[in-house]
View 1 (cartoon, rainbow, N blue to C red):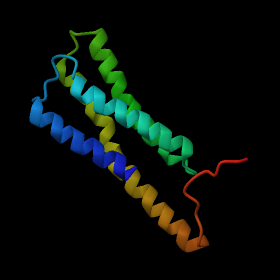
View 2: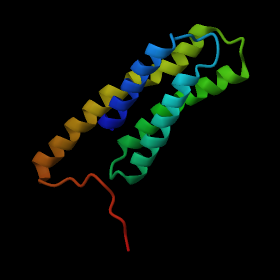
View 3: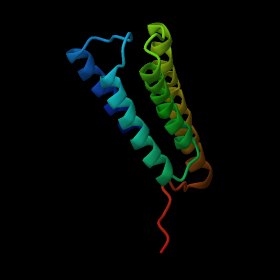
View 4: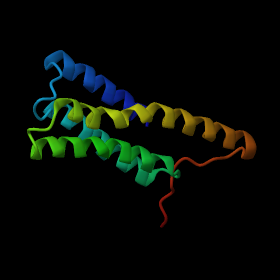
Length: 121
């Protein structure tokens, strides 16, 4: 998850070097970044042996609703689009930090804490 979040931040920086942020129309650069985040975190959540990645996938799917809303209603106020697009990402770092802390605590308590679901034959 940390790698996915880091890649999304790097893609965001790259997008801002090419196109200045504008929320008065559909933001295709961030739409692509948000699609990447939604697909990769959902794939991670389906493989992980944890519950929190599913919540993280939801946080990455919510901005897609902002993009859909903007596409359907071009009269939407740019500030509303900005908040809908950006606000869910504010929870990503705290959730990741909390999940990492809980993982390390479980490792100290039991000595083992499998991270991934194993395929069954």
